[in-house]
Length: 459
Image (cartoon, rainbow, N blue to C red):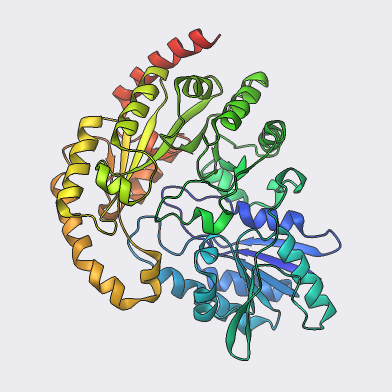
């Protein structure tokens, strides 16, 4: 069969990201199928581009990847869902091939999105095995989908879902994603690749969708295979300037993170990389190993500077741990960026003000301020209306405080999150997460000095 893998994501702020999940599915699809990957990220007219692809290469199955429900700046969600609904309409206007919807965004609330977007099939969570079994069922044509786990489809007008898979994927047995299928504009414009060292997150943060997407059981890849993939990518991508490790939390478990760093050090890895991290189990040894392995910076989901809010969110740490982590990063010369989510359920304006004060006192390398937007609001207008006034009040407060800390990035207000500014930075050859570069010349000098001290201590 001909399989068209379509990446619908069009987010380019702060960076466009390669469709890694879709590449994993494509790599796991048997070679007796013909495969093409169509990435709509850079198309000026995505619907016209998709229609042209469908007419030039009529597929037997269309696999549509949905990365996000809401926009990266947490400014809204309806447009994103309307966009995917229109994509499905475009596909149906050009082909009768069944549409299979999947990806991280779809996996957050698969049954509701199946009802709303109405694909022929939806696959939530890990899709490598499920998608192959679905293709087998489609080829048989007998209507038996019982062996396709995490499948969502319509039966007599109602959404019916099959049970989850009895076991997670064994990551070291999965085929490596083929970067030759990536739209070359990703690397030409941004020079960033994505690599996954493990799946799953055992943390219980109240709002987080990662467990819905990847499960709570942590499955780590062999560090040697991780670095093999990074080296192969460096060989195949001429413009590669940065690698982002997309694990939900790179440093958990710390033993795995340290093993990956030691493997990178042993292979004399030279391309800068960055990752997400967490204050839990983050120690000085790991920070220094990360610096020695070429880590350019880490993004930490601090979320709040108020202990009662952190407790309610079930973060598993308190504000003291954030302060401790910043001290570790400063001593190691590791750039640290803390993300704070303002206005989570139960949070007051006083809590928001306290978090802003905490961030100013913390004085990290950089900080990102987001305003809470619940995924459930996408399909619940009443809920969205209830929270709109609080969001507006929070934005007004943040606007008043925008000058209190020189290195804030505030996407909902466009502070250091302007497409023209980011494009200018890219044209100067800056690679990696852009929070590392915005107005940070003095901090750059400090970090280079600390990095040299750390590398001397490691060696």
